[in-house]
Amino acid sequence: MKLAFIGIGNVGFALADNLQKKGHDIIIAHDNVKSSSVQLAKQKNPKFNALPLQEAVNASDLVFLATPFGINQSILEPLQFHGKTLIDCTNPVGAGISHGLESKTSGAEKVQEWAPDAKVVKSYTIYGYENLIHANFPNYNVKPVMLIAGDYNEAKEQVFPLNSDMGFETLDVGGLSQALHLEHMTLLWVKMVRANGHHPNFTWAYLER
Ligand SMILES: NC(=O)c1ccc[n+]([C@@H]2O[C@H](COP(=O)([O-])OP(=O)(O)OC[C@H]3O[C@@H](n4cnc5c(N)ncnc54)[C@H](OP(=O)(O)O)[C@@H]3O)[C@@H](O)[C@H]2O)c1
Image 1 (cartoon, rainbow, N blue to C red):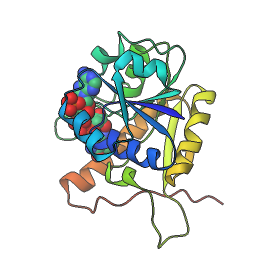
Image 2 (tube, protein in one colour):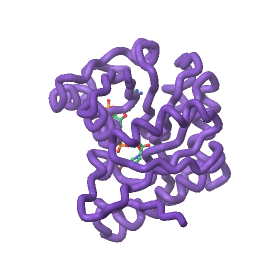
Image 3 (cartoon, protein in one colour):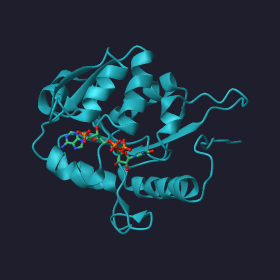
């Protein structure tokens, strides 16, 4: 698939590099080709292409959003998505690793509000970027699980094969309002690892009987 990335820092690069190595075409969607993260990403993976934001969205099958949450509204409102899937990898994080929207609504629902002609799927936020570089846990016979949420089944169906390519099992947890709970899972992971010193290379698994 042709995958556009708005934001190619820790998260964007980890996902883009992983997916490029699985055969996908990566287009960095930038507002400034001289940005340090765009330059670094292209240096680290010369197979990445880069285009201005709207051109990258137009040229892609699916778009990833991996930017600081606070700039999402200004990036998204001028863009046209023409019904494309927009994967929201961003998290509204507030003071003291709290929910940045005071748990009243999810960041993903705000993203959907700012990009009304996109089909938003929340994914890739419940772990740090360290687990997006690859998802190999060779000592276990279960795969790490990636939880996704969104209101459009056809959009979520596009995310399943990408997760399989990266080595994740996918669990669809429901509509986009469920993203609020995923964002709290993020805060749990972030607090454990970034604040309390837990090892970053850990994920959750889904066991059912
Ligand atoms: N870090 C993690 O482990 C992790 C895990 C899951 C989710 N998240 C969430 O993912 C998001 C990104 O985190 P990160 O750690 O990857 O951040 P990061 O390393 O700071 O990368 C942010 C990216 O957004 C780009 N950007 C900033 N303003 C832009 C604009 N106006 N137009 C286009 N691109 C723009 C930056 O480009 P420049 O270089 O030009 O500034 C950079 O490529 C955040 O919302 C975070 O909460 C983080």
